[in-house]
Image (cartoon, rainbow, N blue to C red; front, side, top):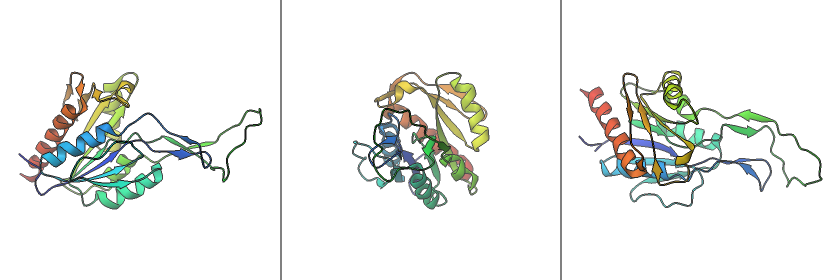
Length: 215
C-alpha cells in the first residue's frame, strides 16, 4: 500500500507567543518529529505540506513548508488546507497559552514583580477534525508526564481523532522517542527508537486507515 495520489498535512515544531518584541513563551520542540513524519509520508508517495513553527532544521526534500510563528497563525494556515488533505497530523508542540496583550515595546526590568494574563490558544487538530469530510484521517500527539495512555484515550474521543501518539517530555529536542499509539479499539506500545522509525509506523497506520475507508 502506498500514499500515491494522497495529500498529507502536518503541523510541526513549536509556536512562539510574544510578551513583547523580544521575549516569548515557547517550548523545547525542534520540529524533528514533524519532519520525520513528512519524510516518511513523502517516501510513501504522498504530496506533503508541513505547517511549521520556528525550527533550525532543514525540511525533507520534496516537502512544501508553510512557515508560521504563533498558534493563531498555525491555526489559520492549517484550516486553510485541511479540507483538501486526505490525512492531517497534528505533531506541533503548540503553546497552550498566549498573553492577552503583548507589549508594543521591550518590557523594562524595574525590580518589581510583573503579572501576566494568559489566555488559552486554540486546539488546532481538534478544530481541523471538527471540519472533517468523509474518508479523512486525523492523527494527534499527546505529550504527557503521567498516565499518558489514559489521557491520550480521553483526548482521542474529545478531539474526534483516529489515532494519537502518546509520548513524554524526553522526546523534545531529541532524535529519539518512546511512544504509545492509541486508537479507538487498540493500543500499541513502541520501544524507544529513532523518530524516523516511529514516523514510518505512524504513516503505515495512516495508509492502512485510508485504504480501509476507500474499500
